[in-house]
Length: 397
Image (cartoon, rainbow, N blue to C red; front, side):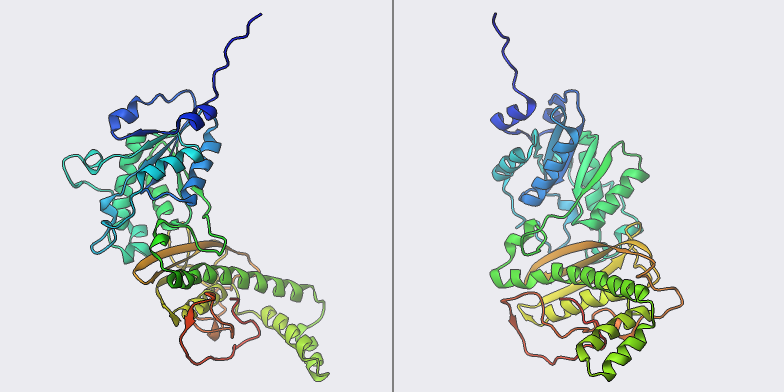
């Protein structure tokens, strides 16, 4: 009895042949879609592990019978005057290899003429109010260019799902809003930020950084983690105060009278948290601001563009009484390289200020609230005066 030949699985075929490189919309339409869903991962090339994570997420979602298309297109519409369009890295051969290893079936790398036939697009999609703040304020027109090319690529690739990284939080938000407002028949999927082992968020622009600049750049992620850790510590102290069963202020005073200074300081911290402010959004801003202020005095220095704690629904700043999920976003320049990063924070009723409670005066954004140095070990620090922490909870570094 003879056995029938076994056909290779789609995964095996991909590994053997690599992804198909297509340059035109006609060639893309000619690709057989099979019986599964199509997912698209839009990139500007110079692919790294962060992009690979997007491709792997897409591959997992559509399964072996689905199709994953990676687009590689450096979109001129989203670069402003004086930005790095001409020097943006273009590494298509390496991009095709990385995309294939991560699970892509095809790489669509069109020319500018293919995407914008007849020259620069005269009709564009407006990002609306959400596209004019933060990144939109720093880079006017940027999100109009992003949405215009995303809309074009969604039409050209006709996917069921589109995957974008959460590192570009505002971009993800405006794309989701566009898809909902304009009834695009596609699911927009966010994928968590991928970081280096030292915390720096992966970005194609990281390759521009010198060694000293990269050490300074670590302040972006360190500031975000400081806010997260400070908020966690505040919650823990308030939980201890709630479970103490006696006035925590009395314990602090009694320990101080006995000369138990370290125990008294700990009890004072618990009492301080239980009394109300500082906590919630103000404390998160203060902790991150302190790290970024330190980084401004490094050599080379970090030049802060913005630090904002915003509501992901509309990208407006959250008030001190905010409860729910917020995004703490930061943008800064180190040397000539502009970097962005963000982290999601959840404010529960135990950490949110009430509307009638004023924030602690030392919890203002950017105020030093801790004695420790900045995060970028190895960077040269310029001499400046240091101030003692104003309260029992110094900013986490």
